Image (cartoon, rainbow, N blue to C red; front, side, top):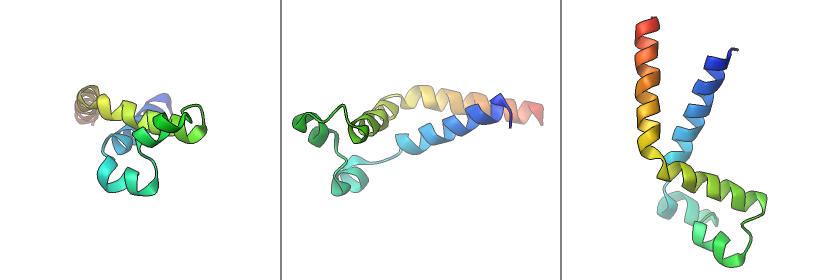
Length: 78
């Protein structure tokens, strides 16, 4: 497993986190951002994971660009 494969794996995980919907998936399971910030539990592991999910949702445009770059590299390299 090389560095390129590892970077592709991280990109796939970021894509998976970016498409999670708060109303349909996160809130019914108690993973809403407002629940963590209002309770003051932002330093816990759960709070940090929720923060990571919301950070990836705000970075959708760079994710789209990175996905396009990965696809082009895969097409060119064969």
